[in-house]
Length: 411
Ligand SMILES: Cc1cc2nc3c(=O)[nH]c(=O)nc-3n(C[C@H](O)[C@H](O)[C@H](O)COP(=O)(O)OP(=O)(O)OC[C@H]3O[C@@H](n4cnc5c(N)ncnc54)[C@H](O)[C@@H]3O)c2cc1C
Image (cartoon, rainbow, N blue to C red; front, side):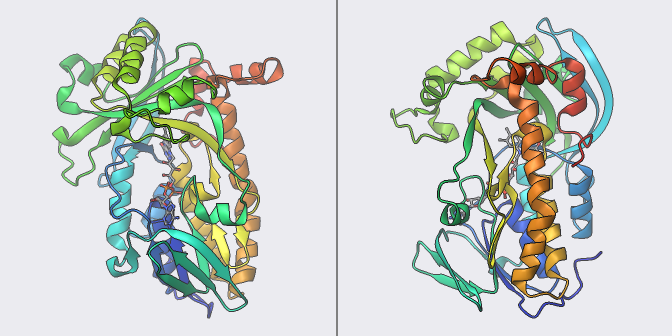
């Protein structure tokens, strides 16, 4: 299937809320099919998220169908995965070739393809109104837009979801990810040889560290532009530890997230100290070298319905999965592809969206559930008994190698 075909549908205008990965996939696919699409993004500029993204075959296929190069231009190929123990000895290894990229690079490639005059920054959706003939979006700057379809691609704290499902809040998983990037030029010759080229893990009890190389967010692609992406999953109970981590340098806690430059130095120092006790020396050294580590609490989101009349939700707005399958971006691309397919069958928009919901709702719920299972052992508040026994199945080095961010999962 190519996305350059004209859609058969006569209602062919769409508003997309959110100009990140899911919004750009949906916007690009629909506009290539002849739809008039406007993307509205609340941020004035979206860049510098500095996070690694593992790819899957479905993501690369979607990019190829959009004529976006999915090879060297996108990222780096990793051949081998390794697990280190506390002493730094290699205790498991697997040959598992995989392309890894970064959020920034993927976003830039997608955004470059979307008509810039139809990408509107500094527009925050505040309300939606729909009737038989269309849907209207209202923005915080007083502007409004109307179209035959509205796509909510506004992420984990989706306003679109809140408007239709006011009680559906992200559910805290009981652990956080410390994340950051280290320039390749800062690594020692030994790190460059034994850690950097691989997808590596260390598994302290109830915790997990992983690291892999990514390209920097600019286009140069030279060796010196590569970075090491490191993530450390750590339990943090919701009553005491999480509020402490999220309390910023001014003593303010907004309850759900914290900007990287607002994390208190004492919290960073304590995390770095723990790394000396808990991690393989290779990973400890990497973690301590991240200049500005950032904290992301991990959440599960399951929307009750991906569709409300002329409104569809996709990507993290509809379902946010814990990161262990590395499926967030791939599932966003698959949502967008399914949406286009369902809207290209000639039915009225509302009927196309009903088909979209039956195609994606349960698949996404399965992805969230599988990701929850893989991460359960990291939870501060894991129930004892059967849940704990089940979680233990995913803690061995062999299980982590085979299950983390691979295509070995089907729904
Ligand atoms: C530790 C960690 C590791 C991860 N690793 C991977 C990985 O390896 N592979 C992978 O595929 N995924 C990974 N993910 C998940 C991935 O990052 C997300 O699934 C993906 O970025 C979601 O994209 P999105 O476009 O749906 O949402 P977002 O990227 O959150 O975008 C939502 C956009 O909507 C905008 N917005 C919000 N509200 C409004 C509003 N009211 N009006 C207008 N605009 C609005 C926001 O500004 C934002 O730009 C990881 C996540 C974490 C936490």
